[in-house]
Image 1 (cartoon, protein in one colour):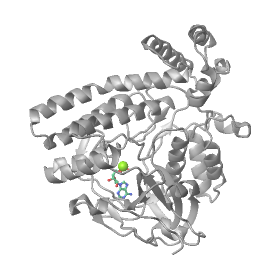
Image 2: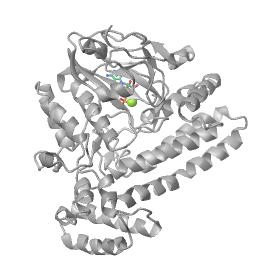
Image 3: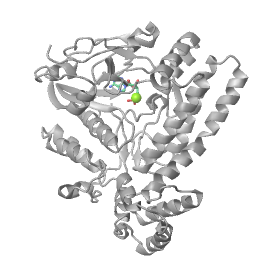
Image 4: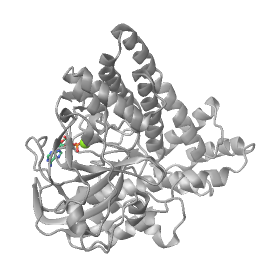
Length: 473
Ligand code: AMP
Ligand code: MG
């Protein structure tokens, strides 16, 4: 075989109740859409001459050393607990240790049914596969922890969804791990304390070697998740399905379903078609992540010798989280307006800008990007309200050095706008992958002004606006 993936698999060595062994289900006519050569290098993967890549990343051919498994997990979905979810359309092929020495999972998504598929077909269609490919790589280029995309393959088979028969595809996803809050919940719900302890040991060794106790692990995950959600908010990202099975222990963004970056700023923004109550709206993310961490805390309690002490310690950790998020948020948004060390007095300045943006229908990304150039006024319906804020900001900047490069380094010129993603998917379905490749290219340099890509920086015109996105099923 030409391709060489230096597998070093650990999850499959855990006890049998952690997963089910499952081979991918072959597809009719695999065709390679994209392979991420830079990421392959980082992972120590030798891709070879390319002849087998479509077969490999479709699941038709197993690379040497792969030991495919579907992982077991549970999760709270929109607040309701499902004791058994698991990989219903994904398979972990195995792990590699990358050039930094970090263990990474290599997973096929859309590779057929598994024992956890329930009523699902185990497949994915092209739209969600390309959406995840572009958004996860864009997120990485923005400097935000995320799973990555290694490859996308069209299967040549149709996948049947509400809309009818759609072209099938498989995504190869790379993650620091696929351990979720829901993985802990899976064993806690079964009162399987032995497995829970093995999971704890595994998670700690893999992600938080400095953590000794379950409380240490909880506090470490809380820190990473607080930082992650603040970073999402800083780029106007709405995850859309922050269920506990989509909340990773490593602190990476995972599961790009109905997610989107917002255009004009409105904290109540929701895109997901299934999120009718706005549980996972832009602004609610900061509260929902605390709720999700409370679920992790609950799942860790059985590991503790004294339940009352455990509850007291974990409650304190969870209650401390909003303050950690606030501090991260202040750092993120402080930098967005050029402040190296924002303090509590600056919080009001930021909140006021966001209010003027909301009232003025301002585009989130373009307002922050043009602010440093003194050109943001055009973003506002009412330039006077913005003008008053601008005066205050100028006064605050008077004793701030290097604010402009600081702002340009954190305020992207370009994000994957929803209407462009939808247009890219429509083109791909029609057989034209040029918009996909162009988005991938431009989004790899989000903090640069790219004069030949100005059309991709513009918000949608009224006919182009996308108000709803759908789950990646
Ligand atoms: P998600 O909303 O993508 O996080 O998925 C939630 C659960 O539904 C997971 O257990 C998935 O494996 C499962 N699932 C989603 N789509 C499918 C599908 N097409 N076939 C089988 N299982 C699926
Ligand atoms: Mg999921």
